Amino acid sequence: MLDLSKYKIILASNSPRRKELLSGLDIAYEIKTLPDIDESYPDNLHGEDIAIYIAKEKANAYKACMKDNTLLITADTIVLLDGKVYGKPLDEEDAKQMLHDLSGKTHSVVTGVCVATKDKQKAFGVSSEVRFARLEEDEIEYYVTKYKPLDKAGAYGVQEWIGYIAVEYISGSYFNIMGLPIQRLYQELKKF
Image 1: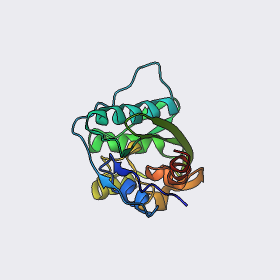
Image 2: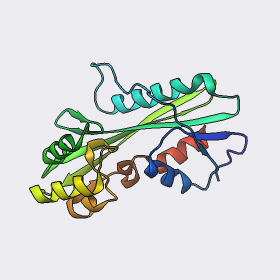
Image 3: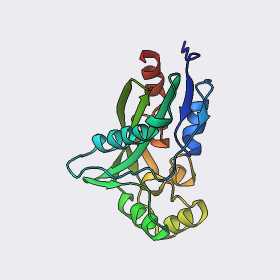
């Protein structure tokens, strides 16, 4: 069983999906977010390394406000297709283009997570494969207009309508695709 009673746990995310998933571990935590954390990364990084780098950078941004008993959890999710990185869409047109690109193809969803205290940091990445059915123009239009997926990497939430109609196959963690590989996080917190 996980005993983190000596820590004040902070989830550094506004994502409702990450809040829901962390709540599923039955641990007490608070949400704390800082404005304008840079999510850029060096050009020489690829795949999982990008998500891990951004998760670590998010953790580093909190260093100054962490107390001795603070345990911080940061995460970043990206979608990868044919070597191209898909983060959060800029606007609805960008979201539609992302879904066009993913339509009928298999892509990777990678989440980088960083668990940190004032003196220690452990970062890891988890990758899952998702195969999308071919999407019709009106399906993409409907989803983007109704669900406004502008806060989601790859412009979709697997737990929403689009996941019901488009996801043909998943290999790996479903919760990772939602934005937090909670089973792996649990294991890492036990080791921490």
